[in-house]
Image 1 (tube, rainbow, N blue to C red):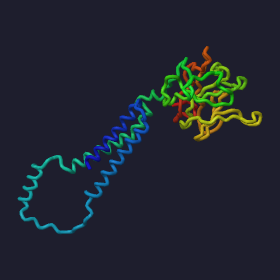
Image 2 (image 1 turned 90 degrees about the vertical axis):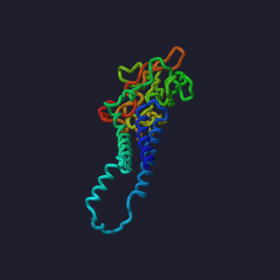
Image 3 (image 1 turned 30 degrees about the vertical axis):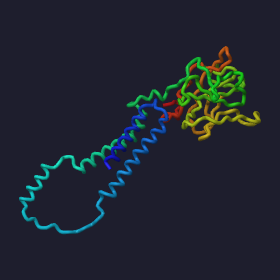
Image 4 (image 1 turned 180 degrees about the horizontal axis):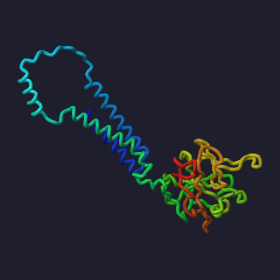
Length: 286
């Protein structure tokens, strides 16, 4: 049982280590595995406690009258002085307390990401830099001539980790006459090509739908749609929220077209990528 409690302690400690080192691959799976093992080991230990240590018999018998109280007192004193301080009960109590403390620390650890105790700057990291080529899902550079109106593309920065939250962007093309971008972004959409973060600003799902009107005069204009909660964003107006629970626009990536015709980033996003929480209704990511 002590071995199970120690295993639970090590599993909880492993959860904290994996959480603290964000460079570990398959981090989400490892976090789930560590926490699951901790709970399994703890449950097994408690099961053994219930089966072997909890007294279930109820025998009643009167204690015999003390024959020699002074001799018994001397015997108790000898046992207390000669016995080991590390008793089985104390060892079990210490192992159980350690396992419970480690599990509690593992549960509290994710909350530390709210700061300021842990460094949260990595949450705002973006791999996009000026001049990076946009690479399509097929691994090939994205040429401006290949970006068609009414089509939805996914792209990544060249030589970057595609698992990075800020890596993926959605690319669409609109007629330049339809664009209503903020004044400071009017040069961000060469030839009507626009790129936005693929991560919804509501709950972090992937923007995977593109609403293209079949009958343009009657139906709503093109929009990027998150399939999780149907937050809808207007690509012609800087990713403005048209519908749904998202509290702020999609971050836009400025683009440029190189002499080779390849679409490149002209800088970093217009804002932090991903969902925001405490200040979401004020339109500012935290």
